Length: 239
Image 1 (spheres, rainbow, N blue to C red):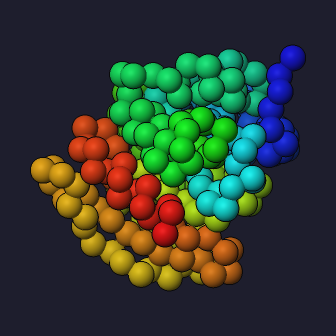
Image 2: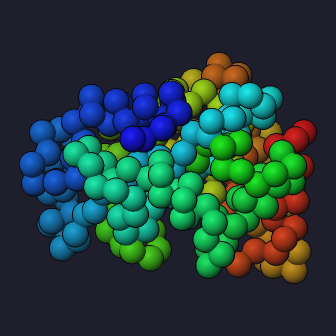
């Protein structure tokens, strides 16, 4: 028996309501059908949809309510269900503890800094785009991003369900146009770079959506960054 948080249950219900399907040839959502046809025309094998990673059971018990958002999942982790590859268990039992992935281990260190423990139950975590065409880097086409983010609005619906107070986007600059359109208003406070240890400066954008009551930080992907990365993001969350 699965013991998902109430927000995770609502997210799964939303996927079902939008008629997502792991069997893309059988999908009845016209946006998903158009996305699949676009991938076929480009010789790409589309995989997914991949669910959100988690909405922790302690998420609403802390004042930060921080949601982390990446670009896209790699491959098809999680268990195959009708409407998605469900990762609410896989993220907790496997991915969160992965030592080979700085994407996960750095987020775990941020949790340790902010909450005093590194439990995934403190945070929420998801991705901008639900399907992918690669098991390594983000190789999704502009059309796939448009279909999923702008037309299907899956990530927008997830944010509405999760109701974060703060969001950290691990997306660098490539998704900035999409991010701006996720919110009722988007007021940029800082749009520049931040020095992270001895690495090249990282893109660093701070913004706020007063309509949605959300503060926003957009940085680069945490992979191969110095530990200064976790300190700076932890400080922003706690500010």
